[in-house]
Image (cartoon, rainbow, N blue to C red; front, side):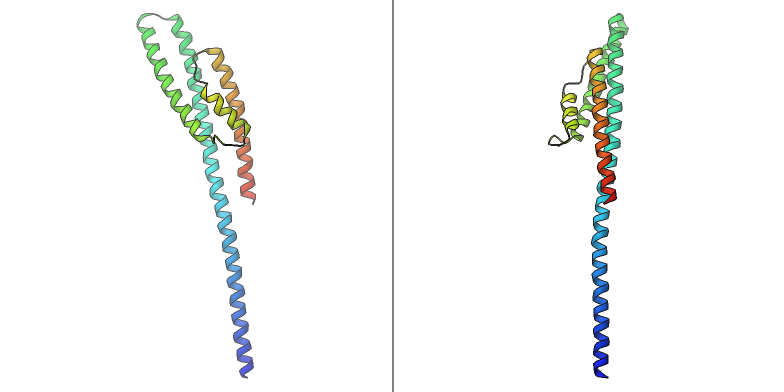
Amino acid sequence: MNFQVDFGNLAVGLATMAIAMVTFFTSISNIKSNKNQKISDYRMIWISELREALSLFYRLQYELALIKRDYAKSSGFRKQELAETRRRLFFDISAVKTRMLLMLNPASDNEAERKLEKLLRKSVSDDVDEARIHRKEMVDLTRSILKSEWNRVKNEIQK
């Protein structure tokens, strides 16, 4: 009888240890999954913020080009008003450009990201043709960056 009680206690102890091990490994798996999900959430926020910043940058650059065109045709008070608007736009564009530069990783292995950074550093211009070329190239590079980041998000979620 004594042997059966000890065997029963041993079985309960082993079962408890097995349950603890399963719980431990399940917890570790959940922690890794939650970590990947959190990273994915931050990447999705980054993607959205980069998209918004580029949209604003694009709009401000376009507005600056229109101001330059109107400035050349204006005189008097209207010309002064346009000059002040142009000055404000340069400040706004510089702020958005800086926000975008701070979002990019200068040591990135993504070639599009490195090209976008170089393009941003030289992109504030009121030359209509030059600005248009820069805007188009920025949109193409940003699309490439956003696509690669979205693929990373999908891969991290599937892990």
